[in-house]
Length: 222
Image (tube, rainbow, N blue to C red; front, side, top):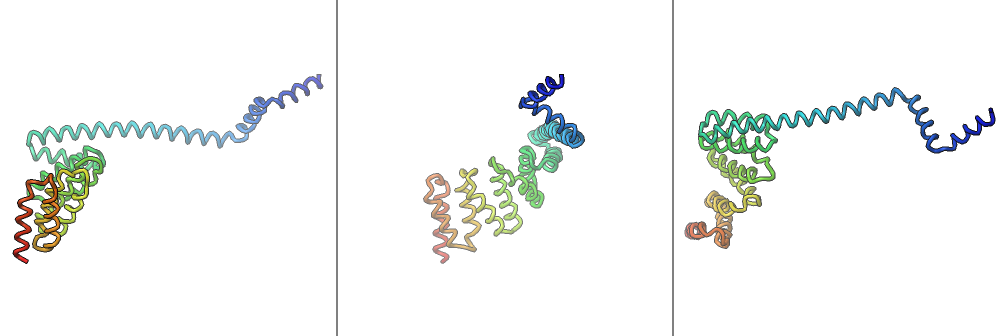
């Protein structure tokens, strides 16, 4: 009986599957507490990710609802209510698509009301948008705010940023003309260069004659 028992035991030990199972059993018995802690951590991480996704989806619904309410007021031209609701979206969810669009709309509203500091604040938020035209057009909005406040150098700086932004290439001739007008008394050479670029641009026909006229004025003044 002893020989048979030992032989079976020896054969079992030569079985790689059984070796693994027996070894695993010993390992789990010796490290039961550590394994328990690891399992708890894994469960907590999984639960945390699931909770994050749920919260994230909940926030998306809140953003969409708040933006929808704001747009109803905006389209109805109820500006006080529109401002109130747009500010909720822009201030609470500045990184969301709706938050960026709300900031852009607020910038336009405040600019029309000659509240240039408020307009500047929200155009700054909207300018962080990197995919759509809103971010690029906000640079024009910032330029307009600085021009209205008498800071021409800052206005030109933002216009030059907008001029190299491909998202609003359709606006480049208008932006180039605006920079030329702002620079005409401080940098005649730069203004002439911009005017010549406008004249050479076949898509900027509406600015050709004004650009030629400005060059003539600068030449006569020089």
